[in-house]
Image 1 (cartoon, one colour):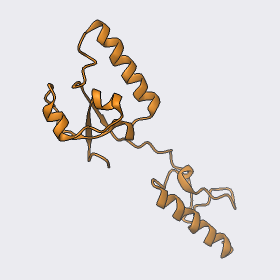
Image 2: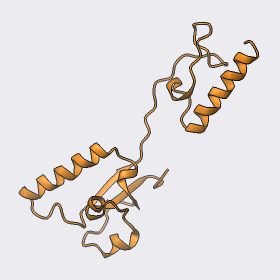
Image 3: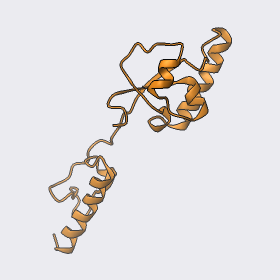
Length: 130
């Protein structure tokens, strides 16, 4: 959604907390070998993961000097993982009468708007006495 597929970021931009741009990548010493959109990997990967990647690159730099160069390119993708779906009827009710599953916990809504809409839908069903 942020990059339309693969995102690329310069290592120097990542450690400085800024997004990579086409201009910065073109000025760099490393030419991208994969078609990717310049961006900010911190928007698609958790901080702990990025901290681990940065730490690993600095450790690699001790055995392979130059690895932690500002122009080293890092590629990533935005991936969403959803819960497994719960068995529900058309009213979002489980096999247990009166137990509804709404929001991201249902595994059938994949956005904030869908999660919110599922809550409104079930509230209306309950209010109607279904």
